[in-house]
Length: 566
Length: 68
Ligand SMILES: Cc1cc2nc3c(=O)[nH]c(=O)nc-3n(C[C@H](O)[C@H](O)[C@H](O)COP(=O)(O)OP(=O)(O)OC[C@H]3O[C@@H](n4cnc5c(N)ncnc54)[C@H](O)[C@@H]3O)c2cc1C
Image (cartoon, rainbow over all chains, first blue to last red; front, side):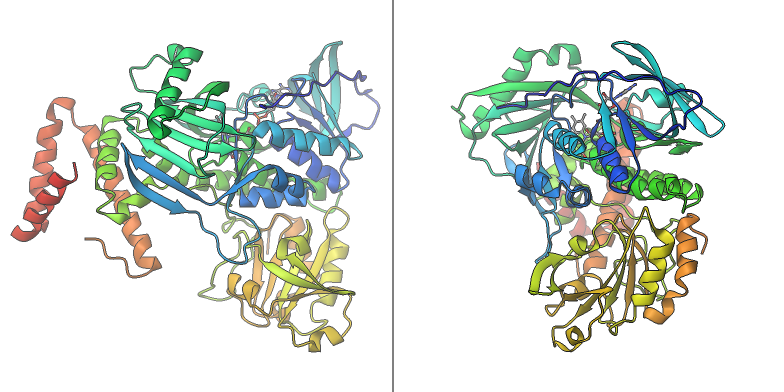
């Protein structure tokens, strides 16, 4: 069964009275990024209203591949389990040139990883899970059938004009977050433009219902005998839905190609060639796609903040669109909540904007290579692409050019928040990098419980000591917590090697993790005694040779709350 | 031939392969279509003259021919 969207009614509401206190935060757009951000803010005590033009979540799955890092973000929002249950995990892919295999790749994963590098789930289902969770969350409301017309900022208040089924309304808010997608009205209303590159090639994207024995892996055919000259990508989704993407040639008329019969012909030819397919299938949804690498110059304009596709676009090859939007939501939730809560300077939001703009640049650097390969827009790139494909079985290094460079979490090494490395040759992760999650055993009163670094961190700042002396982090964590509250919590985690000695000393502030297997220590390239300060969004703020090198907690708190000044 | 001795070595070989791919693609795009084949022939002659001895040249010609 393909997705059947649930329809939501308009719930009447009055305009904000001019003399009343404005709303705290309004999010425009109930796409996955707006929804994740709204949940993240409300989890940190910020009341949020989401305004959505439509009356349901998206129909037609669009994003299907969610990265390990996105699952971590969703876990922090409290919906990780449902995403894990409903999605299909995968780790590998294969590419073929004509009928010969030219690449078989595994995405990076090692023993002790908590999640697979990627899962497949339709964007419609992903959005519905988030909407349902918001329905169970206090102080977080989605207002359906509310199309934002424009916004203006004056005297610290943003006024939003909204078209509703019962006429126009105006809402006043302290902070407005534009998560209204690629054609953002908020962006247009502020006279802002995306800059960058748009690529020539077009792809038809189709979801089909098909019972097939093929495994859950990414498969790509370049110039397949079924559709010479084209490139075809196949992905399995849950419930026997398959995503088929194929490239149109420069002479194909996109309007004619999107006709149902044309799509059916092309896909039938491919499935017949591939498996001698006799299994009937149905076309459920289709769309035309063109790749773009575009971004706003800044994601903050006064009291208006941009996230997701409203701020930036990346080509789908390598699946970075939604995955990077969820990173935006994760970082914006704790930074904006800290500003709203009155602890942080609004400069922290400039840091959000700078970090996420730089993340877009990192994404584009990778996505651009995949796009030039998947949809070579010029004769030169088409000629070299074909040559690379024919030489790949002899020259293994060329297979790296075929590899889709699937999305991985971006870093913030150059962020003003990131504390410079204290060792000359710091091993990975270096400050600014996303930390690896690893399975650990957490000590608790009845005994050890299987856990992971991320479960133990939750959505707080974390001071992680690697075999540090009992109590060495206690004062630091307590003082830091006082300064960062209420929007952001602070936890202290300390690893040990299971000799029982450490456990004998009660130290309630420090959660003990048994890392006898050394999984965590090796993943962090850590020396005994080293201390890691980890941000709520999983980026490493800094690594310090020992507790004595952390400096004063007040100093670190000021550094964070001022958006980075240390 | 590409020899890959370490992670760093692999990174360097991949970076070089990317550079070759992109530079050659963009070079082809800078010449008019009518000159494309002649340009590529000139380019191969120059690369061979400056960087290949007789055995290497013969081996690479054979490899390119067999890879069709
Ligand atoms: C074919 C395809 C495949 C993709 N595959 C992947 C993938 O596998 N992995 C991945 O990471 N990314 C993928 N992407 C990208 C991904 O879909 C987007 O990056 C993602 O949807 C962005 O989410 P968003 O919430 O920012 O914007 P959107 O999903 O566009 O949501 C914006 C919301 O705002 C609402 N809205 C718009 N204007 C207004 C207004 N004026 N007032 C009120 N509401 C408004 C819209 O109705 C919509 O609900 C894919 C995209 C496409 C097209």
